[in-house]
Structures are given as C-alpha cells and as structure tokens.
Image 1 (cartoon, one colour):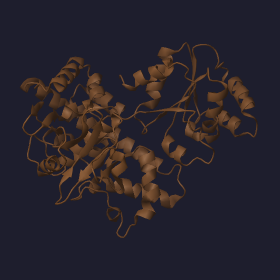
Image 2 (cartoon, helix red, strand yellow):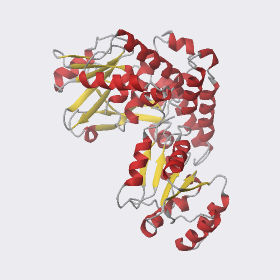
Image 3 (cartoon, one colour):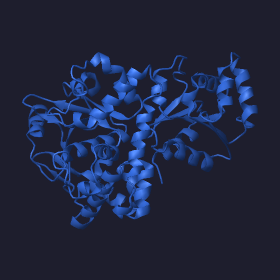
Image 4 (cartoon, helix red, strand yellow):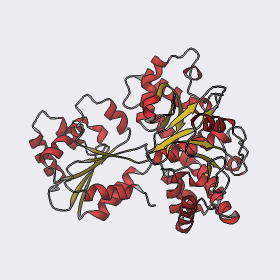
Length: 437
C-alpha cells in the first residue's frame, strides 16, 4: 500500500549537502518499518537492516566505554556492511533500545556525513523525551508517520480517479454530484470501521468490503499491544496504572459537555500534577493527539494557547470505535446517535494532524465553541466547524464570524462541496478533510 511519506523520504535522500541521519516517529503499527524497508530496497543498491531487539551485540558495542571511532569500526565488522560504500543505507529499527547509539548519531552527522542512516522504533518519542544521554540536537532530521489518512485509504482501493475528482471539486468549490458523492461517503463509513492502521485497511481491502469477513480482532489486538507498551519506559508501576487510566478515560472525556479533558474523569479527586507525566507519555508515544484551547484567535495562534485547557483525541478513529465497542452495523447504520459527533470530530482531528496542522480550538462565552482553528499567510485564521450529518445549524460558528470576521469559514459535514458567499462558509464533505492544509 502506498504512503505519501515516501516522497518525503525521497526528498531527504536527494537533498543537496544532506549530512543528517533521519529519524521516523509514529505510533506503533502505523507502518513505519514497512515503508522504510520498501524505500531502502527500492532506492539504494546496498541496504542493511539491524533490529536492536534482536541484535543485542550492537547494543553491547555502543554501551562500551570506548571512542565513537572504535564503535563505528566494530559496528561495520559486526554487520559485515560497508556503510560508506556508494549508494548504501543502514536502517536501524527499534533504536529506542540503545540511547547511546541515539546520542552517537551526532558522530555520524559530523564525521561520516556520506553515510545514510534511517532509524525508527516503538515508543521512540517517549524514549527521546526521557533520555539520560545527550540527544543530538540539530544533527538528526525527523519525519512523522501517522495512520493512513483517507486519501491513502482510497489509494489502497486503487480509487485514483475518485481522489483526483475530489481534489478537483475541492479546488473549484464544485459539487461532486449525488452518485459520486454517495460513493465517497460509503468509503468514508468503511474508513470509520478500519481506521488508518495498515493491517486493518489491508484486511478490509482483501475482503472486498464483505463486512462479515473483516477481522475485527486486528484493532482489538493493536489496542492490547498499546496497553502492553504502557509498562515500557516508565518510572514505576504506579505510572503505568495512571497511563492506562488516562487512556481508558478518553472516550468518556470527549463526551463531556465541554469536551475538554478533565482529570476528575480519571479518578475522583485526581489532580493535574499527578497525571501530567503520564499524559505526556501518551502524547509522546503518539497514542493521543492534544487539541489546545486558543484564548484569542490572533496571529500567531500558538502564542495565545491556554496550555491547561485541551481536548485529547485518540490517534486513530478505528481504534476509538473499537475501544468503545461499536460494531460494524452500528457504524454503517448510523446507530451511534449521541456518540456520532465525537467519532466525526476525532476523524477530522486525525486528518488535520496527518497534514502537520497543530490542533487548536476556540471557546467563547455562552458555550460557543469552534472545533478547530487553522491559519495560513494568504487567508489568515480560518475557523473549522465539524458536523456528523448534513445539518447547517450552528450558533457557535455564527458567533465566531460576527466577533472576528474571518475571510471565510469551513464547515465539514456529510454535505457536498459548495460555497455560500453570503455567509462566507465553504462546505467540505467529510471525505475531503485530508485536503485541508
């Protein structure tokens, strides 16, 4: 299955005067190892992979109290691989198992800048945040891989003509038309079932959308693996318990009247100071995506963030639906009436995050709230409202428009593309959220 990060990997390879190793971060099982191996095999003549879970001897080399030059020499002998040979690349998987090697990436950048190295790992973000050794600041490039967005999902079905048509209609504010719009909405509902985890998508494609054959245990197993990970790179068992408690509370957190994250929903009397570190663990592991409140929607948005008020979304909408026990029938028949809005909002958050957009929202007086805010140099700050159906009623968006007079607003819903010059609201179908940059 194709992933859009492949183009970023090519840019890294072809960048002139590139001296830095590359680090790929992302939630477990989002496809990091697969896409890196595919890239290395396709784009380099000589490729060597080392997995630090299995190749303990490499870890032992870097834990020795010897010079970086000596470690480099021993590494080449151990792997029987000449890293400096033209058109060669080394892929270090599970690099979080050796922070000494992470620290030594600076040595590769400064002393062997002709060597190409890519590294990745499970819970790598957590490890980097808790390293005792010095991190090679400024000496490593980073890329983030997220679960497959809706465009990549359609790619898995070879629906390239549909993708092109969605992009055309998005650009021109042109309606898709009833038949094609419904086709895209049908795919959107399937995406809510599978989410963007590659194994889950691959299974549904293999079943050719025969839902009875889809293996719902795939997402269930991934969730259990996530919970097993909560024992790793933690200070003690008490922290593990807090991490698990936060994660289990997230579906109900999003059902709050205010939708904001409340520590009291984890345990009665829970305080932020007790759960700050476990919450940070979940964010660094990419298991959750934090959406912060903006006090005043002014440029720069990040300068007006309230760090203490936020919403927390699951990293993948398929994971969310599996976690709360929604069945395929519940999703296809729109039976999750009350929870449907939360599912849709989480989906949009995932699509925006995959595009590298900071997750921010606005809340005013009298419970007025805009789901997301984005900004760019051309249009300024643009409010985004998310609707799970074709409803166009929104006092909150109207309030925001009257107060701050943005150039235009975006409403994401099940309605077709369109633009109302009177209200200055651009209508974007749910399946096109991946196009918002």
